[in-house]
Amino acid sequence: MLNCITFDPNIMGGRACIRGMRIPVSVIVRQIAHGASFEEILEGYPDLTREDIQQAIEYAAWLTEEQVRAP
Image 1 (cartoon, rainbow, N blue to C red):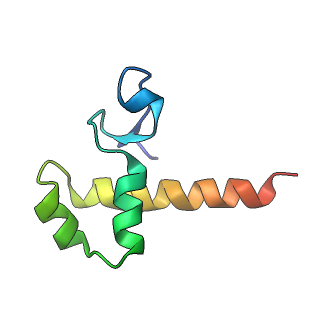
Image 2 (tube, helix red, strand yellow):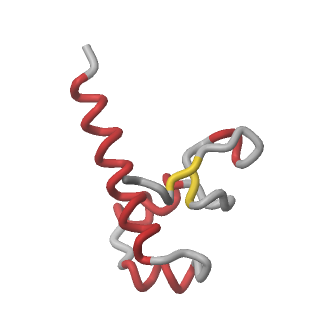
């Protein structure tokens, strides 16, 4: 379950964020894509946990899977 991924129209325009914070999932996934380690991300975003980062990756994978299934 992706309980760390939240959507709130009052936070970042309803984009997928981490635990209601103003940290969009896309920011974390982009950092991973550019080679950042979990440790580097945690240094830059001390309010995050390893689970937050893992769920951001899982959410991005789920979105990609859904795109492939779409007609």
